[in-house]
Structures are given as structure tokens and as C-alpha cells.
Length: 133
Image (cartoon, helix red, strand yellow):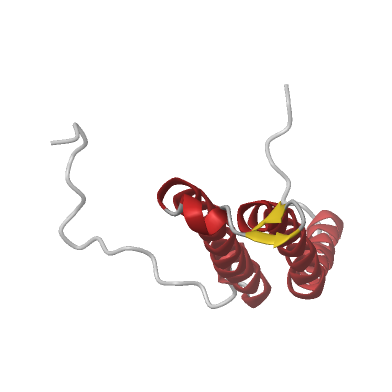
């Protein structure tokens, strides 16, 4: 089908090497980074966009509620509109704190481990290949 001859009948794939270096994707720090990037931003975006959509829907379908005066010329709609800025600032601040506490330490640990592995690989004797003519 693919244009290659079939493998011999007694062929089997090579056995797994017990000295194999684990993949970066299997590293626990990498998994925690992926989880941190997956869950927290999804929740934050859902809350911020949900609040904005609620504001837009109230503006469209409940204008009497939005025009209720709170104090002087300040209405419910204006107060909710200004609250959008506070919600966005809170979301950005929490995202920054989350990254500093959960992601940055894991990234630093992973980076130092990868730099050590690279240094070991660079200092190890390289097998001699064929020289140039």
C-alpha cells in the first residue's frame, strides 16, 4: 500500500530502552504548567465575558432597570458599565498572581533541569563519525 516491502515475518519492534530519558511532555512540571494554562484562564475568560454579556443583555432587554437612578445622575446601567472596568482589572491582577505563584516556579525548575541536561550532553564525549575527505 505505501510502496515499501513488508517487514520480515520474524521482525518485532525494538524493546523499550530502560535508560531512555523521559520526554519533556511527561515531566510533572510540564504537566502542571499545561494544567495551569488550561484551567485558570478558561474560568477567568468565562466570568469576564459572561459579565459583559449580562450587561449587554440587560441594556437591551431591561432598559427600565438600567435607567433606575442610584445617586444623582448615576444610574444602574452606568454603575454596571463602570464595574466592567473593575472586573477586568481584577481578572488581570488575579491572572498575574496565578502565573507568578503557579507557573513561574515550575518554568524555572524545568528550565534549569533542561539546561543541566544540555550541559551534560555537551560535555559527554561524542561518538566519532566519519571524517570529511
